Length: 84
Image 1 (cartoon, rainbow, N blue to C red):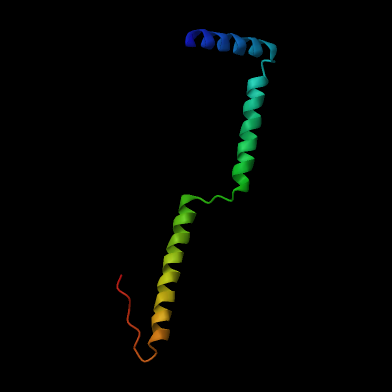
Image 2 (tube, rainbow, N blue to C red):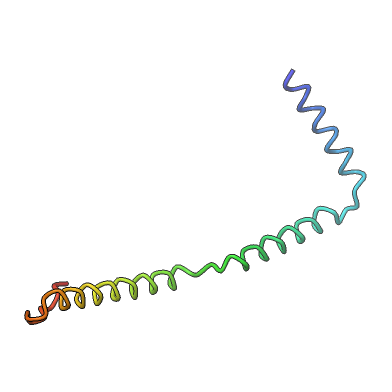
């Protein structure tokens, strides 16, 4: 029974394909590619390198904030370098 449905689907697909112009599939591919690229462009994606650099800067800023918070909490203590 499943083979019969598959065969029917294949026949229907062939019939539809024969009614369409030869350039239809290439035109659709170009259209879909253009739409996908447009959506990706609107997503404001960043490269892996840019992401890693932003993470590095964020870690450095967090360390500075922690150091400043410690200094503010203990104003009489001398600042100690943070081990790396």
